[in-house]
Length: 174
Image (cartoon, rainbow, N blue to C red; front, top):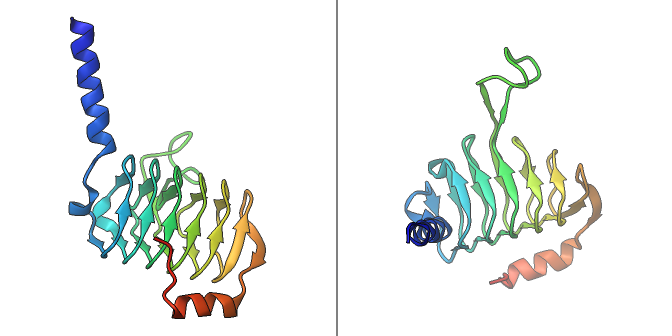
C-alpha cells in the first residue's frame, strides 16, 4: 500500500512538472506562443519571448543572464540554451568556484533551432538562421546562415530573396 501511495505521489509530481504554466512567470511573452509540456526554465523573470514562438518539449533554458527570443522562432525538442557558466579558468576552487559568469543570449526573428541543439552563453543568433540538429553553437550566427556541427559552423546560407518573400507574405510556421 505504501508503494502505491509513493507511486501516485511521484506520478502527480511528474505531471505537475510536465504541465507547469510558465506564462505567469516569464518576464514578457507575446501572443500566439506555444510552450510545450516538459519545458524547464531557470530565471523565467529574465526571459523575453516575442509573438508566435514555439518551444518544444524537454528544452532547458537558463535565462539568468537575460535572454530574448524573436518573433516566429521555433526551438525544437530537447535543446539546451544557457546564459551562465561556472568560473573555472581563473577560479578559486576546482573544478570551478561559486562564481557564476553570466552573458545573455539573443535569438532573432524566424530562427529554427533543431532537435537537441545547444547554445552557450553570450551567443547571438541572427534573423532567419537555422541551427541543425545536435549543433553546439559557441559563436554568433549570422542572419540567414544554416549552421551545424560541434562547434557549429556555417554550412550554407538561405536564399535572401525567397526568405524576404515569405516574410513579406507572413508565411510563418504554426
